[in-house]
Image (cartoon, protein in one colour):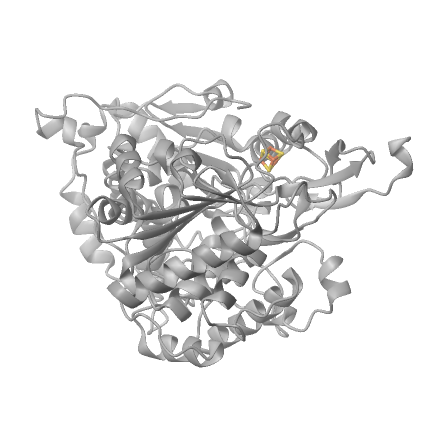
Length: 588
Ligand code: SF4
């Protein structure tokens, strides 16, 4: 068959949080031709080598094609009944907190929504956490402390319009290549300056005007120095500061820090501060070098403090921008994939929020305290407090910190279920039950990228063997646990409409995440949904947040957070003599 005769389908690259649009053309024999979508606002047709090679990922080698129990092939009926019975009996015998889901930024939003609803709304525990915890929790916490919500203020267009881009702990050239191409295009067009703040010399440094190879973990001290310089040089935006609180406390903390701990030359620090202060259109992009740290949240707030002080936030070409690693890390944050959040940026600990969600879901119980976060969850598995665990699209036996102990914990867990597309992972090998899930090109749903753009991922290939979409697997377990009505979903579109309707309630409660404008999408409209940035309401579509000075704390004001440098353990505790950095391999 000549593949060029088959229609192209618009979908989204499943590799990283840039969220590039792709055009997929199946050849009718299982293979797939892939090109960049010229109309997608994240990439305008560009792809990196990973996205370009997506067609090579659709083979069936190592695919899990049938459910298995204790290594033996079984029917869906038997496997799902076993999972439902084990979870129900464990909850009945030991309480809701004796079970847990560990999910992943690889899940589509609709999958995430159903998993979160089952655990928080019907099992009655908040023990669901996502592997995005490991990379994004610092940004979530930093945003919430400063803004009162986990809101990404800016957009990718800000990179195109900035005169200075500061990359902090971000190897953008390798980890988010298409955004890096946008940055280089801006540099060519308008001479955008680039500063790299990273202990390592990375590929970004080839294009940088200044590389600040600071001591690992000393970012807070550097941005504290910048905050002090902003204020002392008169660069603070007095009018914008009326929309904020606690600047003096932040300055006092900043003044107590010594920039010398960064190990940088004073002249380089001075050049950086001067450039930042004198350039109005500045975007600070940060990633895992900031987030994955014992002081990650403080690093985030040290950066946000500088943007708040100058009012350079949510305006064209300026603002902080946290870039996510996994394709749907952002969707997981929005949908309540974290153990301390409800869906739609609603708060577990807020009684009004809980009551709204409980009534919307018509659920009899909803936890009023956060569940176990990733690291604590596996400690609880190790200690026998969690007796039934469902791991979905992630490989914690390899990817969690202290992986040996996580592996031992899973091995000793009474009952472990793994949903994945392959049985060839270290975690899958430890599972009692393996459930075959559909892969990225075989499933329908949505993802959200780093700048709040929601895009459709579309099914273009038949599900192989007996593989099923994750939302369908989780919903069926929910029905078999006794929650038939709540999990009576027929399609991803139906789940999305429910999610969008719940977000409308969140919007009424003053939350940022509101996509209620999509709550009445027909199936056809869902099928043809264009990429679009939230919020999406009857009054508002996309755009930036906070240029108007309105934040999501109760009083509407942003908060400066006083932070001070905390040395890594290697500096203070002889037991930990090394400082290690992580990084990604290009094109892996
Ligand atoms: Fe895919 Fe990320 Fe590359 Fe875009 S930048 S093509 S989303 S891996």
